Image 1: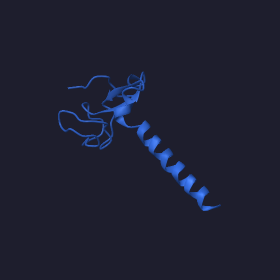
Image 2: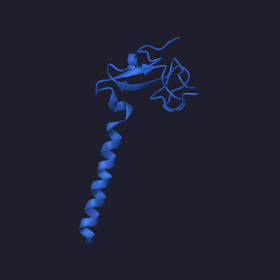
Image 3: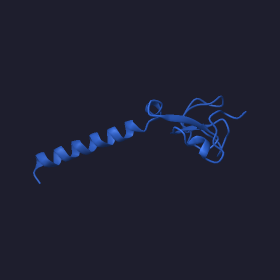
Image 4: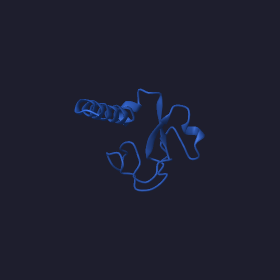
Amino acid sequence: MDTKSIASAAIAAILGLGIGVASVSPANAEGMSKEKCYGIVKKGKNDCGTSKHGCSGKATKDNDPEEWIFVPKGTCEKIAGGSLKPKT
């Protein structure tokens, strides 16, 4: 392979990774037929803040009824423990 081909392949790989990461971010998920699903989050895997904290990844325990993640629309209530509203 020549240098030009290697450089082109490297640029294509970097761009591909950037597109993949951008497509799954919580900010983009809202416009992609997703819904917030409460009560099914694993420790440290929540998508955004609650009354307890303001950041993603801060859930302190599994299945906290106030923590949520984005899931494909129509699937939350099919998941054991899943709820479209936070449980208080």
